[in-house]
Image (cartoon, rainbow, N blue to C red; front, side, top):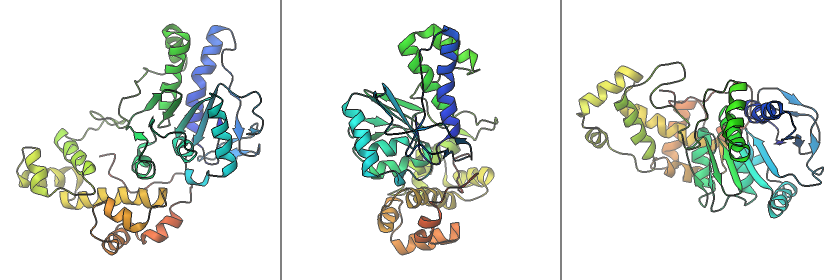
Length: 324
């Protein structure tokens, strides 16, 4: 597992522990998972956890059967020619490549995901689609596509690990490993990243509100007019207004603008796309209009946010309506 600075600690442990359990339950060392870092030095996760026993990427002789690239914040930093050449060399030697959280970005920058399906954390999906149009981005927990595996991160890494165990060792050991680490069920890879019926703490938004938000999220570049959204949901415009006011505290028009701004901010801070292209992709008539709206919402202009927003720090939280 290649741990890049700011890697996802939960995903690293969630992915490894089912293999540890499988070894224990089988009474044999089926799996080994040495850690790698770019230079062999101590590497810190985004939550401050440090791994100090990592080898350098040069210490990969013989080549592994399986390489997991674990990244989180600022994956665009990891485009050094040496790293990309190393990744391509491993891929050329038939090493199965896996990206966790934003690890898919690192693989894609190396040209290893063209004409593949892939998954990343939902916060980065829009940016990935803009940067790598030749990769089919699924809003999935994890994706297996030939010799490329990708995962959105977090606890979904355990689902991916258990699926690997199931495919390689059989369902009995996969079930036993899942029980041992108290993983309630093996979620299929194509299960959506965000819950639909219930939120993690139990609250669920009305289905009509969710449907309206989904329509907004799917029509960013060419925003729908409010009457059209209401018509598609078989509601009057007045009913739609009441629905949003009651459950979000803002009008549907305000909410729609915020959805577009949230998506635009992700593109500003996670990609190097020109501001004018981001404005167009998120339904703003001009870069000037987008800049004014962005400053009003987030307190700074996009160019400044591009600099400040790239700096990772613990417990970062972007304004977002994804949890409604």
